[in-house]
Image 1 (cartoon, rainbow, N blue to C red):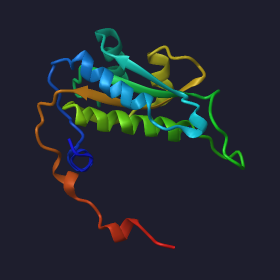
Image 2 (cartoon, rainbow, N blue to C red; image 1 turned 90 degrees about the vertical axis):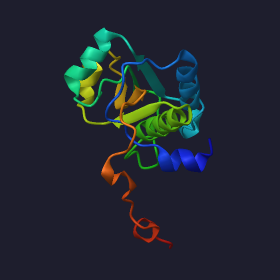
Image 3 (tube, rainbow, N blue to C red; image 1 turned 90 degrees about the horizontal axis):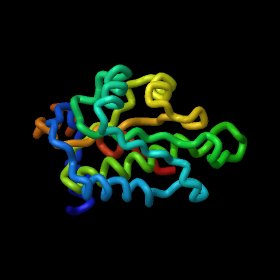
Length: 169
C-alpha cells in the first residue's frame, strides 16, 4: 500500500469483531514499533500485547474504549531510561512512546488491521491494573482487530486547511 493511502485512509475503529488478528500481522506491527526512532536511540518503549480475557477485562474496568478489540497494545516507557532535554523541563519518554505508537498504528492499517488510539484512561490506574513495573509510565493503548465498522466517523474527513496549522517564519 502506498504511504499516502495509509495516512489518508486510516481511521479510528469503534466497533471490532471478535476475530483475532494473525500472528504474522501482529509481528509485522510490532516490528514497525521496534524500528521507530527514539531520542539517542534509547528505545525506552515497552509494548505489552494484551489478548487474554483476564487482562482485557482489566482494561475494560479502566476505560470504555476497547470497543471489543481482541488485541490491545499497551505502550509505556521506562522512566529511568530517557533523554533529559537541555533545561531539564522535559524528557523524551512521552515523545518516544508516541512515535513508537504512531508506527504501530500506521503499520496496522498497512497490514489490513483496524485500530483505535486510546488515551481515555487514568495511566496510574491502568499501570496498577496491569501489574506494570513502578518505573514505567503508560502513554496510550492501541486497539487492534478487524472492524465491523467499515466507515470512519462523519467528522473524520473534516481537516483544517494547511494555512491554518502551518506557519513559515
